[in-house]
Every structure is written in structure tokens, then in C-alpha cells.
Amino acid sequence: MSSSYGLIEVSGIVAAINSLDAMCKAADVSLVTWERKLGGRLVTIIVEGDVSDVKSAVEAADRICRENAHILASSGIIAAPCQEIRRLVARSASRLQKKREDVPELLESDGKEKAGQKGNEEKAEKE
Image (tube, rainbow, N blue to C red; front, side, top):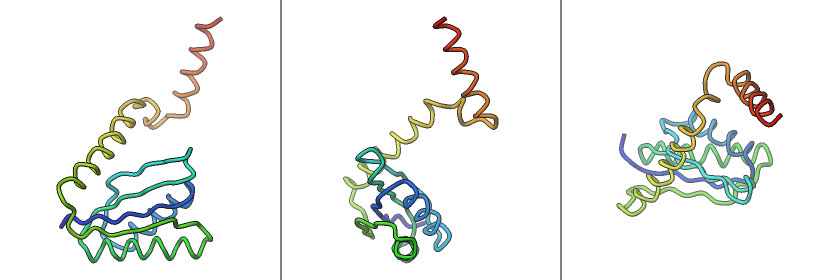
């Protein structure tokens, strides 16, 4: 897979998930990273793939946003990202990976039960 980036910036988590789903179904791209700003009101998604796939993915996100009245604040395609852009995206992806590692017990198959147990244990310790 040649390394091109497709970026979209949408208003809200629902719009972001909807857009990412459309992007991945429309083309051979993969999620590199995502970031929430303004308390989740603005979400940036970055996907990677061949230039033609990235272009198709960004167009699919635009289409799904229009169909569902989501706000697509901005979008872009970087066909051949320079080293600085690659480092910036890698830094964002590493922060996302670190967040995933910070909550491994919540990602297990019975995450709801474990999260509830942890909360109950903390309550018991306080009493």
C-alpha cells in the first residue's frame, strides 16, 4: 500500500464513526489515527492508502455527511506526505495507542462487567 493520507474533519463522534465506516467500505484504506478537539465536537480522522483509494474514501465521507446532515468542516488528501507530516501523524497514532494500553481491562470481552466491578471495588475501599 502506497502511503497517501486522507483527512476529514467532522462535527461530532457519530459523524466521525459514520464517515470512517463509509471510507473503509468505499476503498482499501485503513485508519491511522483520529483526534477529538473541543470536547469531541470536532473530530479529525486520518486514513492511509493508495492515492486513488484515499480520494475515493474522502469522497465517500463527503457523500455520507451530506446524506445524513453531518457537518464536514474540512477534508484533504496528501498524495506524498513529507517526512514532517509522517512524524506528526505517527505522533498522533502513538498517543492513540497509549490510550488503548491505559485501559486494557475495559477492552476485554466482558469489559462492561469488569468496569462495573472496578467501580464497586473503589466504592468499597472508600467506605
